[in-house]
Length: 217
Image (cartoon, rainbow, N blue to C red; front, top):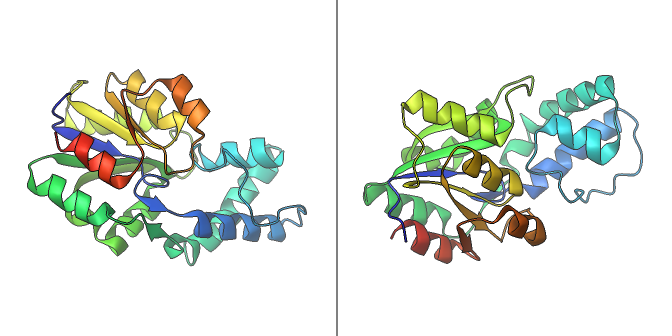
């Protein structure tokens, strides 16, 4: 098993369960646009890709309405949805132990960067995280592969199997592989196991305890 010097975490579905906040924000956006049919249950696959992609593919919105939906989503999310959020039990303790063991910890998320920073500060993750990279406002550089690449470039770190990407969706695993990193798929988040199996991660974590064991080797 590799000994990892740098660990890059996804946020939603990996460190926190933001189902409540995302669902409330989607409902707010669709209600504002008078789009019917959303019962409060997030469609499978909505969490993980950029918001723009989620609204287009899951709700069939055109380009103009997608842009409007994202604006409404962020209007609610920035005030309320942001903190309708629950860290997975044991996450804070895991981050603390990894940090004090000398690992360098990062976050790469398709969430808008300023929101991700606020969440990390609210839950105290920022004490352990060296740097966070998120999506830009327009969603133009929001693919996980691009975000990871920008993070590595900003730290002047070369691709290595001693760097690991941890996430719950195929976007995290593919993004890590495309940047030459090791990958860990967590199964307690939003991703479908069958999709993750096709992505062929290097390691599997069924729980936070499993994840800590892998990362602390």
